[in-house]
Image 1 (cartoon, rainbow, N blue to C red):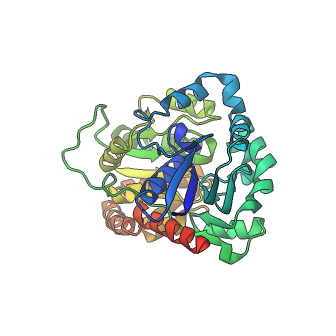
Image 2 (image 1 turned 135 degrees about the horizontal axis):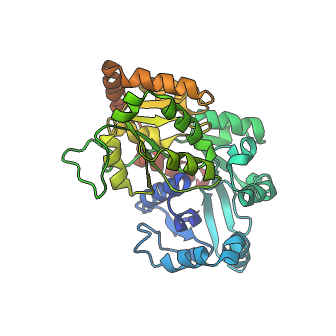
Image 3 (image 1 turned 90 degrees about the vertical axis):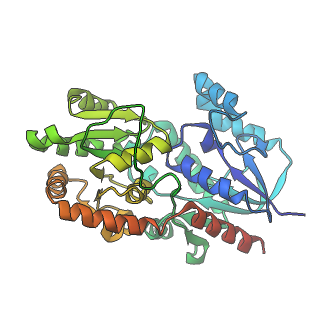
Length: 371
């Protein structure tokens, strides 16, 4: 009988951001392995993995959770109540999203901890999320037999803040889909873009430092802003009223595309003159790798894990200094040789990161724990 592995996939019920993307990309590759029998937990146990949110049979559940405000607030409690009545037991339970569910029965538990922004930057998260983490994270995390994290930087934070041994914390880098994020020719999109533009990708939320980016962009000369518009891509997150107000105030130069598909995003990367990622705090920083693979020169924050991920293929800036962001933007805009150097280095560095490689390392860890 094959070992039974349960993956929590609740993150697939909402528009995919970082953790949802990570959960999906690893899960759909793991299920190709025939040595394990995979199950998925959406508040109930299922053998169906959501690959296409539009076509999934679970779409009705997603719509229900979004449409009833009271239910939305009570979702986590409802999930725990439902799962208490299930008698299924698994050989291994993988929680990709920080907090293992203590009602799930498994011989081994693996949890992915991506960062500690919920402690370090409480103001960057919705109040309900912070309350949930304070109540359950430190209580439940020690149910885990092993921890997965996305960078050496995050591992050092875990060892500093949690009582786990070094051997139990495993760094597995995230990846990208190289069939999607690659160089394109003859690009066609259903929306119009400027001839030249600076691009930033990420949820519209304070942690991504969009206010710092908007201040830096506004400080550029009128000639540069006339030539290079600023394009923002990302799901509308939270605490974003000030950000949206700044975008609206400069809508002749700033274009907000909102949430777009990966296929569209890859083409937008290809068309961008420069990719800008001034985030205050990241456990990995996936958009940097996506930009690399699409041949886009990158200006990134020098904070947290980002230099580890970007290596020498990035021009770095101080995210806490909008003047420094503006200066580095000008440097990169005016130096075509630097752009070409970063483009070449980025394309090469992107080859080191793939979801296939990441999934293989997840699978190898599961095998070791179950052997």
